[in-house]
Image 1 (cartoon, rainbow, N blue to C red):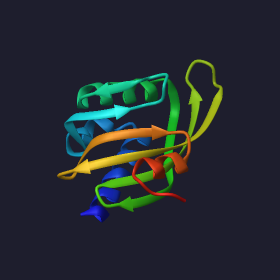
Image 2: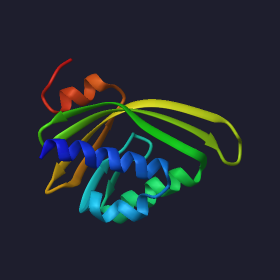
Image 3: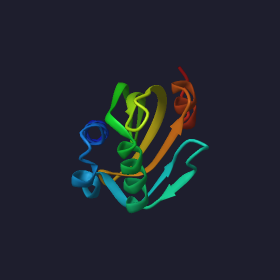
Length: 130
């Protein structure tokens, strides 16, 4: 099952980068998914709110590209180190970011996503250390 969870996270990241999140949202996110984003965005509740938030972010940029530089299978969790590269649609300014996320899955759907500044924090969130 956990290998399947890693593939679900990969599918999510590809769909986001390809701006095709709407086409896979129902197969990836649980209807009651909770997304604990950065302090700026807070906590999002439910598939529609998560997809709307992510689509709004993608709409702000030309060619949003988000990839996992590392995916760690931890049973019902997948820890991802994520690299993002974006170009602002109105400003043309480039933005590069790196963060970690813990994707918690149940019945082949994401039920909880937590973002962290570092991989070490994400590991700690699931009781592991580097």
